[in-house]
Amino acid sequence: MPDVLKVTGSAGFTRFPCLRRARRHAGARAFLVRRCFVAELSERPVNSLDGLKVLVIDDSKTIRRTAETLLSKEGCEVFTATDGFDALSKIADHHPDIVFIDIMMPRLDGYQTCSLIKHNRTFRQTPVVMLSSKDGLFDRARGRIVGSEQYLTKPFTKEELLGAIERHIGN
Image 1 (cartoon, rainbow, N blue to C red):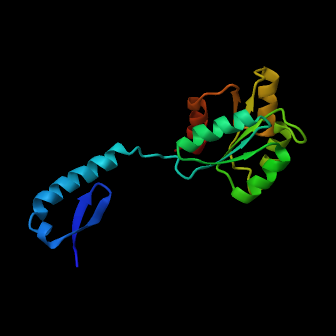
Image 2 (tube, rainbow, N blue to C red; image 1 turned 135 degrees about the vertical axis):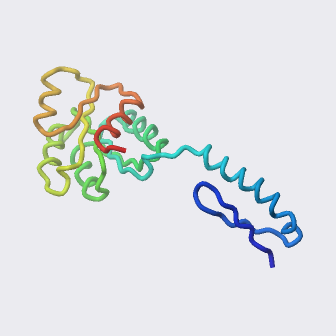
Image 3 (cartoon, rainbow, N blue to C red; image 1 turned 90 degrees about the vertical axis):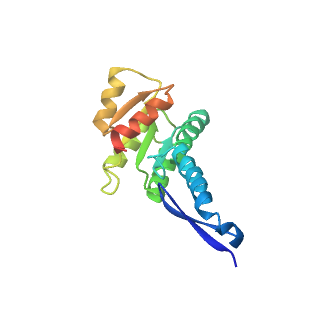
């Protein structure tokens, strides 16, 4: 039966199985294994967005995929919807932590969708960020009137998306 070598690292301890003959040199090996274990942990980026639920609503497949790719790489759990009606069912199913909404969509546009979210008792505290290629003062004001917290102009960058999340979620 193999012995167990207990190695302490920055995240607690880990058990590594070892043979009895290797147990004699356990002190020296533990030091080496421990050093490798700690180095491996420190090289891994600590991601504060792990598990954060994000809903991206846009009728453009390119925008949805771009946002999904950028946010997934940061550890977010990303859900997408093509329009407001699709989004309302996904909001009810997944309870996202933040929502990014395009303004111009078929069936139910971004303003109407945002208004419905903000008038719902369960989801009114969910931050909503409007996405649009329109950069007019009227569009920004209308977004604020329906309850959106922020307005991002397309094309957006990874830093803008992450900045919006950091600003409204506080991670």
